Figure 1 (cartoon, rainbow, N blue to C red):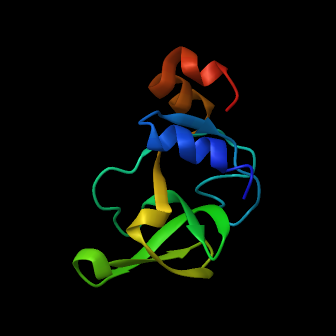
Figure 2: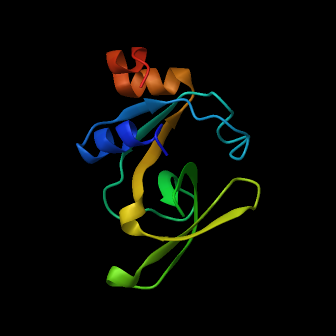
Length: 118
């Protein structure tokens, strides 16, 4: 997805990024247009983590629902906050993890950076 490529590039460069995802698949945890902060996903995502990921060519800010396998064969089940599932993906397709939700929390975490739309 073109909207996600600059964000993914910044996360891969080690930056934290402010984003306002659209859609209702993550309500009430993340409302459409609500500010979130993403950090590079270092280490293993855990079930319940909201992540920026790519599933079958589409990018989502969705939840890690389950983990299966070990080592390079480890896979992550991605889905929304309403029980819908997107599918299984390898770790390399998880780019960032949500570390703050809401304007005040994002501003506190990112400081002056949060004033710039990303």
